[in-house]
Image (cartoon, rainbow, N blue to C red; front, side, top):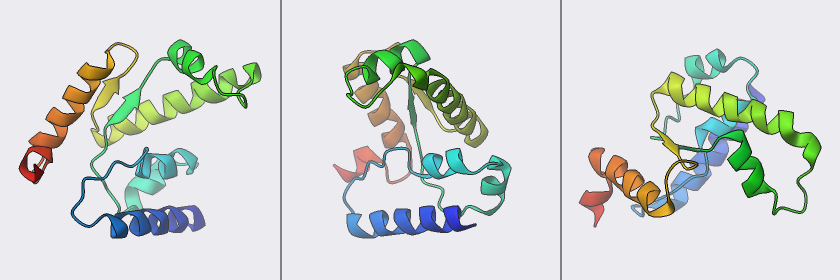
Length: 128
């Protein structure tokens, strides 16, 4: 319960400062959900459903991208594999689009994100 409260408070604070400006949140509610032991609990009580696209890459690509970080260690393989699976499952459960950044170049990813945002009521195209 405390984790859900902290997550909701953080999202409220972030959303409250945005006004009408476009806003990108890194994983938004998916981060909260990834820490709730039984995600079903989240789906039953969470009220901060923000349209979310999961930007996802396979484990090899993720590890290669993270390899440049000085605080990453080889022993985190299982940890990263676990969370890649958790995030994929959350996206499927919530019918959130999954953008395979390991299979598409940056420009294609941007175009797909823009298309998804534009297709939503009040989406990106209507705010330009």
